[in-house]
Length: 278
Image (cartoon, rainbow, N blue to C red; front, side, top):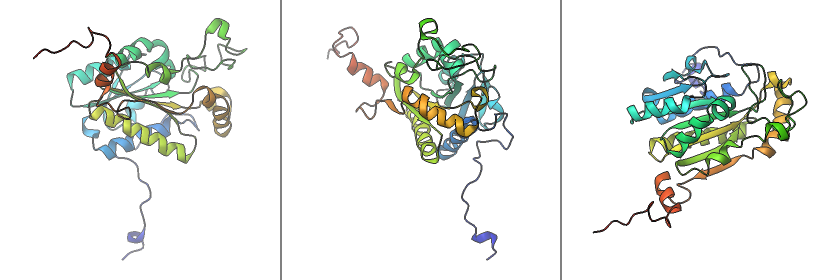
C-alpha cells in the first residue's frame, strides 16, 4: 500500500464548480457562497438539469464559475428569466444568484411578483449593504447612517428612507415556501448556510413553492476595510439590523406547500375557498 493510498481526502473541488480563477476581490464572501451552491448541486445530483441565472453586479460573470447551464439576465430581471425557464422546463432546477442592488432595487418588482406567484424557483441573495461593482453607492439595504459614495455623510432616513429587510418582506407573501437568512463569517455559520441552501433547493425539487436564502455579506473593498475588519463591522452593525434565522418554512408550519398554507391563511374568505359540491 503506497503512502498516497493511506491519505484521507478531506476536501476536493465540487464537480459543479469550474476550475477557474474568480474575479472577486480578496476577502469577498461571494466565492464561499458559490462554492456552497456547487457543493449542494453535487450532493443533490442535479447539476445536469440545473439552470442558473446570473445577475448584473459583482456576480455578473458567475456564468464562468458554475458548470451547470447559465443564462445572463438584464439588470434586476433574474426572477423573470428564472420564471420563464422554469415554466418552459418544469423538470429543471432553476436558481437566480443576485446581489442587493440587482434584487432589491431595480429588480424589486420582479422579486416580489415571482415570490407572490409562488414560482417554484430558488434565489440566492447576497446582501452586502452596498453597490459593489459600480463603486460603492448606497443600496436599498445600506444601513441608517452608513457612509457610502452617494451618502458621504451617512444614509439619512429622512430623505433616503429606511433599508429594505428582504427576508421579512417576502416572508409575508403567500407564494413563498421557505426563506432563511444566513452568513458565512466563520465555519459554523458556513455549515448553517450550506444547510439552508440545500433546503432551499430541496424545497424547489419537491415542488413546494418559492424559496430564497439571504446571505448577509461584506464588501471589504468598498467599505474600505480589511476582510477581518469587515466581518467585525458586519457582526456589530448588520446582524442586529438583519437578524439571522428562518423567516418562513411552510413545511415546518405543517403544510405540504405554499399553496396549501395560502389556502389556510384565507380560510375565512369565501371566494378564495369555494365549497366543492358533491
